[in-house]
Length: 226
Ligand SMILES: Nc1ncnc2c1ncn2[C@@H]1O[C@H](COP(=O)(O)OP(=O)(O)OP(=O)(O)O)[C@@H](O)[C@H]1O
Ligand SMILES: [Mg+2]
Image (cartoon, rainbow, N blue to C red):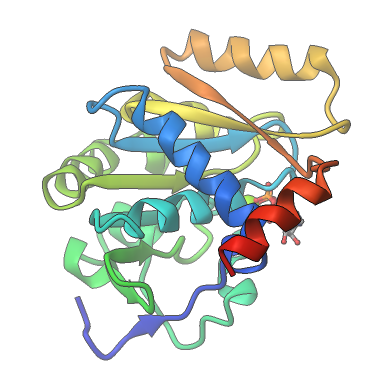
């Protein structure tokens, strides 16, 4: 790892006490899935459902407890992380590792958050599915498991491309992000079926963009815990 390179990430949980609490309870739910659940893919049906946002905050939430966490951007097609987090400079990422152009230590980058490292997606490769399906991806996950307590993997939407169905079987489980009121149940079920056919363990769904509808509750707790 190049100690001179550090990524500064921005998190949803920093925006409000209420969001921070929601991610803590999500973390608790994941912990109750079992101690063998350490490598988790995050996907959804459509673009913009909130996968990158939710997966990064899940990663942060685990690192807040002092666990060693790696956040992997496996959306090699259309990663928004470089722009969203204003990542400047050239960081070799997952695509460079999978295509043999970079070694494991080259692609691990520190973030401003203690215990949270990141692997960026890298350059857009001609065939992401082929790269994710080869042995080098399994090798990558094996190495990550030896070093990190938790590996959280952001993927593209499963309703559009099959990358997540290639990544998730190599993980211990997958979380599906569902934007409230945006996805038909038929579409959500088709993605569930696709994940199950690929032998993925679905840990659960995260309802994103949900309205809290309980401001007094939020105010009560935020005023006690500023
Ligand atoms: N709970 C939320 N509340 C408010 N804004 C959100 C929430 N979740 C996501 N967003 C915003 O919605 C937009 C899309 O989110 P994000 O990039 O995480 O989706 P995605 O599923 O990763 O999209 P893609 O499939 O294109 O990769 C972003 O601008 C993000 O900041
Ligand atoms: Mg995304």
